[in-house]
Length: 150
Length: 150
Image 1 (spheres, rainbow over the protein chains, first blue to last red):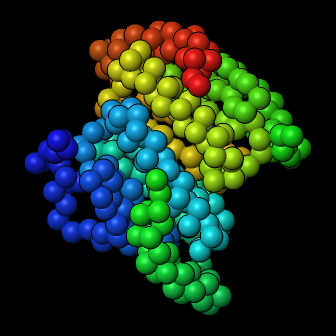
Image 2: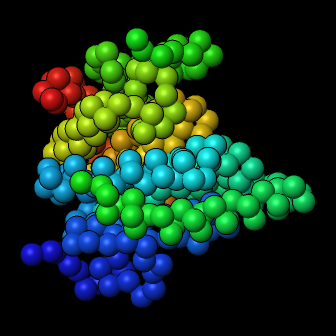
């Protein structure tokens, strides 16, 4: 039986852009204008750490992580992908899968670092609109990507 | 043959506290007084992303990651473990494996976020000394932990 916690915002989400789910994991889209295509891979079971999962669930989670990273690289061509499982604020296992670009407000620091002072030139704005369109395609493609992960 | 880059600080490290290595990966200790026991798992091959590794190398890397996380939890009992593969500054695949405590200067934010204003009480100082001793034991135990990972 899946463990849940009634006080956990990832067990009882109030609003999420759900892209895909099954009994073990779900993938949600994160609206972030600096990082279009940002997604989170969330354990359905309320556990805090990777090593709380069974070995088979760990294997599946990492396969999903790599599948999503690969699709993100293929469809968005970001300058870098950032993967992070922190959970200090919400200790329910979830991965941030973040496309990074050299012109984003935080690069080359983490997205949790202080933002840089950067100007939004016309060319950057055009680039971002183009990325946002590709990010939309990525989100649409992810259900098939995740379903194909064995 | 392992790929290397002469301009990459992780291919040609100037000083590292090497805890364990083989042909595919190495583990180094990171000196950080807020996060005693902090280690990095580094790919020996100069690749940027997880999905650049072969499937078998990915599997081994994740097994090492979970093995280290498990040992860290067992020996340090941190309030949380943070796992992150960022690589924006040094695009050579490496994982930060960070023990977090509620009294560390950044909790519950990331260790890359702005530090909080916190007082170092006598009891916190004593706790940290005790943690540092256990962190030392963790670093000594990691070679056997990593060697045992198949």
